[in-house]
Length: 305
Ligand code: PBG
Image 1 (cartoon, rainbow, N blue to C red):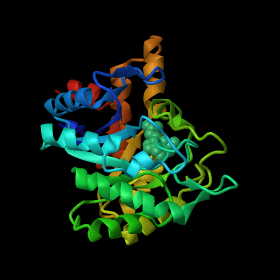
Image 2 (image 1 turned 90 degrees about the vertical axis):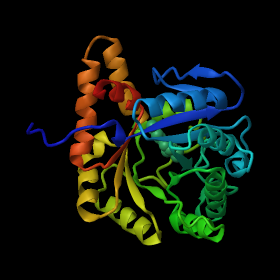
Image 3 (image 1 turned 90 degrees about the horizontal axis):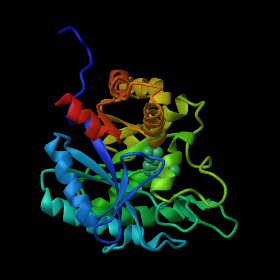
């Protein structure tokens, strides 16, 4: 009766990976319970998510072919654009978010274009990210979620959406995204590890909190409607600080490494999976998250009933 923080399935956004083919359900070895799904299986999975009371999914596309410019990311018939159309057609009430980033689509695995020296070209990447956003929104995505961390991308995306008459499509910016070891398992799932170098040039240093507030401020000034802190568990103080300084919904991404650590420990019988999961999710909400992106969404929704 006196509990201050209560979880609900409506807090969750479930991340899903969509790949080419039909009837594909390939397990991700580093993420027990997570799969690469072809569009047909994705549509079915989304039905289960909705039935559990989880209102939203975020989609990550895994293209059949990658190239230097990440062409499939912003093609009208790209994997994620086709997936969005199919899911929205089958489940119109599901809130479908599109992750906007090039790293799953580029052969070099970076989130933006590279120059001849292998350096990320921030400004040259913006039109491609904006085009990915508009093609996803035109396909029916309800929310555009840029995760690339290029400077100025929220403004570029907002402008591009407005120019296409997509004024009402909100932007959830991965505003404070740290350069984190906890993304390791995701990069297996999305086959998106950088082939050379790392993401420290565009993602944030784990030691910085004030920089997170600056990133959030900039993204809001550029037109973000919701902001995200990522990862969640090692950054609960950042979630709290962002929550105290903004009036927009704050999302937190309970990332792949946070998920896999618990799954591995539970598989070894070292920890009580369900109790630890609920404790983790509760801590993220208690820190101030209004929305939690989590691979635990289905597990937790089942327990919440
Ligand atoms: C793409 C992206 C990443 C994640 C979400 N979007 C990976 C990265 O930045 O390398 C990570 C999610 C997770 O670990 O669960 N830029």
